[in-house]
Image (cartoon, rainbow, N blue to C red; front, side):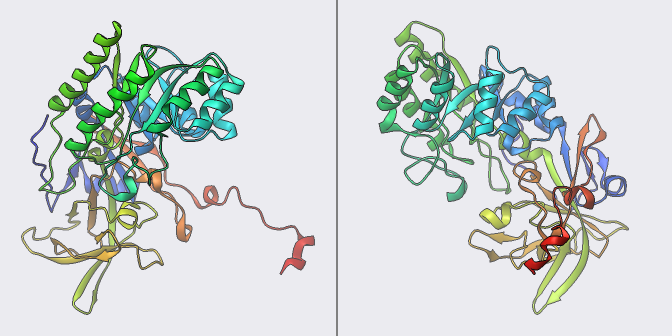
Length: 430
């Protein structure tokens, strides 16, 4: 792995070897730019696990999903749409190990139909899913996602374990769920546990013990254990990576104890999303106004929380850099609040959880310069929307120094394509 201390420059002139000026002029702003080499480096970090299953909800562009498929990753889907994305990106519906796993806490009608028709393996996050699948597809193998009673994440909103989380089958309900599975001749072949996004090493290590106990309670029908995702990604200079080697040793020791107890091989999976895509991504925006409001200076961008919602949702911190259009002094800096164009007071990228606005020390910039929001490849575009009738951003994937447009900017006609005016006879409505 790379150094455990990330570097975040305040001034940059290129992304993945491609000039920022070229990217902005070629594709416009705001645009998400992804560095394929970073994704593949992070994938390589995890090769010690038998299966690396990409949680595509982090960044689900077809080109990204396909890139990871070509390089050996399996994929996780949390909706019917994500199943269809995985299939469109080239994944087979079934195989060994399962190319696609549907992980959720419910089935909607479309997802259940797809899983049954396509033979997609299901990771059940509620007792009801066992019943609903068993009623229409008895005799299949399933995985159980267990909520161990504890969780951890970089925000309380990303904590997926414990009794305030909706996710997973409560650990005390495992015997009841095994009985439900037996009624429909469903074999529990996999066990899964995920406690949150951005967990620390201590809590990740606790997953091993809890998962081992749950797997032993099920017995030797289990051939796969998944420790989920949640690996932390540094967003600040004082943050670091988890020791992947040490984490694997803990997980592998758990797996070997299960193998010794059952006398059979057990596959060990990990399910990263953010870990693979976050550091690869940059949101490139143009500074459209430099405003002084009392004692504060604001850089207002043409990107807002409709493009990157993490700051307004979690108070998430993202490193930022400035790219000068016509030269500037990189040593001349000052405190700046960075915001977007939306008609919403919360449209601020430099805020802490709870909505507290803070200033960031950034280079002195002018209108027309570009601002780059970094470590934006996870839960960026995928959480975007059309608030204020603004189009979805473009996406560019850089492979070996060559930028590829993998999603063009949404047009106005595409934005309103599903909308309909009332017929003339309905004019009495208003």
